[in-house]
Image 1 (spheres, rainbow, N blue to C red):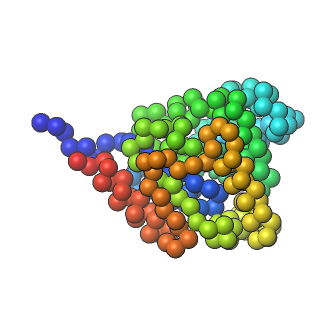
Image 2: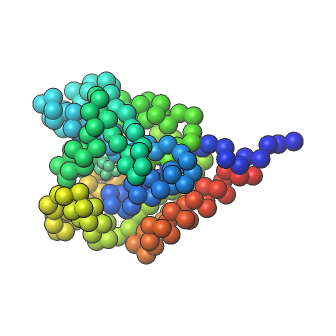
Length: 230
Ligand code: DC
């Protein structure tokens, strides 16, 4: 007799552009499923941060790849916060600035950087029981993930959310420059030659402009449960 698949730990991917609500949704989904949370954007952000500290330009692919290959990164998911620990230091706040958003987008466009970080991401997600968020997690990093989602929202809505998030964190930002930053990043992330941001063929698409994040979480949770219970 085949075993029911209920509560089988699987990989769930959530991809999409900046400000679509991925982080909040991924965090809440991970908590509801009692899964780990893998924020791949935080890895690219940490690389941009480490490179800046080492005086390496975000345009220098080979040197960035060398730093990426030795990146000492860890996550600690405590309460509502997924802490990012880089070489033993908590960099969770330091990597969330508009400057590091641009840095992450720039370093992530180098093919050798993406290759160097691929195994790290797969290792961190090994064994399943993990919600992974990013741009290419359903297409490249975990192409066999059991449940894949692509979350988006209008530019204006995403910029508004990003401003609220950054202001809540005490940063001084305005809507116009945030909207410009988001469009610039979307353009770079979606048009790069390798692993561009794109929905996987088998991803379920959600536009969160018209839905509250509560509604999105409820829909994703129901979809994951349909795929993991037999
Ligand atoms: O999700 P985020 O805003 O923290 O991501 C920061 C940047 O990292 C994003 O602009 C592009 C890059 N990134 C990527 O190229 N691939 C991923 N899987 C995740 C992020």
